[in-house]
Length: 245
Image 1: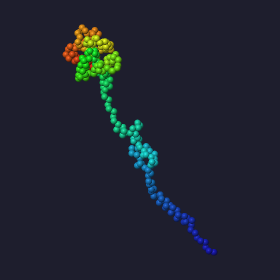
Image 2: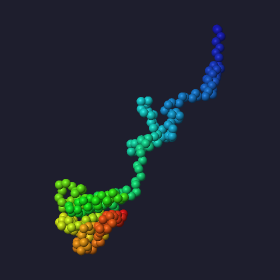
Image 3: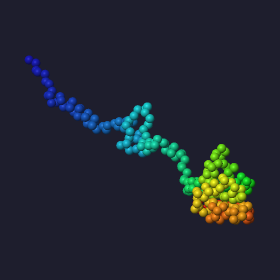
């Protein structure tokens, strides 16, 4: 009878594979894991300058426009900062511009209205030329020159008084005979009965006793004086205009 074949013990057969497995595990654990390449979405270097990571915009496709930080956003008015920088600044308000254009001397169209008769047109024109050519360049209303053609005489006489600061009454014999001159004189007195210096009588070619009784409470300029009283009339108008400032 043949002898039975001898087999190695089970313990000696399992020790060799187990040892190999333990060595492989030790090698695997001892190796450092390789660093994964950072993606474009998660890379901190792609964060926009001036923005924190909490404010970073969500990932977007390449077709979308690049996001902008809050400080790059345009103002709420819809204008870009460059446009606001290039827009011209408003000029400073000029002091006293409103008061000078709407009050004082410039509140009316004329400084003086010369009331005269048709007989005294030449003398009235000389007086107007003297006042307009003086250093103050007084603005004068002369009826036959400045009245609107086709307008009613009464309307134009009243408009001349309303649009003038002062009235010069060229009192002559023709003035007293002209009913329109008398009407204009009474109209001027009724509009400003207490305005001292606004109505300026210029007596020419009449004696003192022929001075109109309606004007007895006013001093008149004597046309027989130097320069026929034109300088006194000018000084009286300028003196009244100074009270309007």
